[in-house]
Image 1 (cartoon, rainbow, N blue to C red):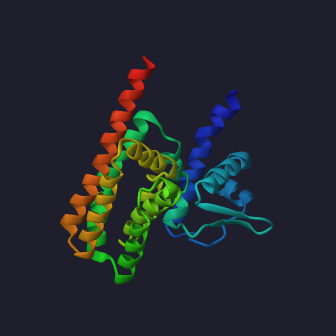
Image 2: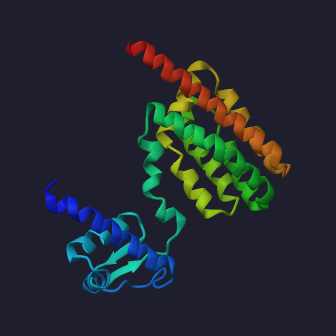
Length: 240
């Protein structure tokens, strides 16, 4: 990186912060058009190249949206959009980082499941039950089981009515890792235990019992966490 680049980076960061301040203060809100790049540069006292980089950065984060021929607009600022880049975390993580992801899930999922037990509508419970019925552990329907498992947990968190929580949960979920979990448990003959975990979570939701739901979700995540810990230890031993 040359000197001009290293000097411009903090300036770009300041420009990013100033635009965020404009949004948080209500000066420009969701769906509204930003002042032009030239006007922003003059107003904030930064070069147009630094302002362009700031806008590009906030566009990548889902805060701004460039509309061809119409300018740059603030997005709807929906949690799912703002946390979209976070959603690759579980998908690309491995080893100890993936274990850390599970540890975060162990904090979040039980609380979310307890909240869902208190807030879920009859329609929510029906949808969750339908997904549970598709989780059978049969090798012939492995792909559908993985899809249903992900959908089961996502539907539970969606039932809380908290869009930010749902977006965070999605970021901690991974179809690839879920497939590994089911394959590993199938190989060890433990798929019935996973299915039982899901059944107990569903029963607690139907009973609208937040504490039972919290406990059932915690047991489930801890089971997966223990499995991953053992798998990582086996891999480390094999690689020595």
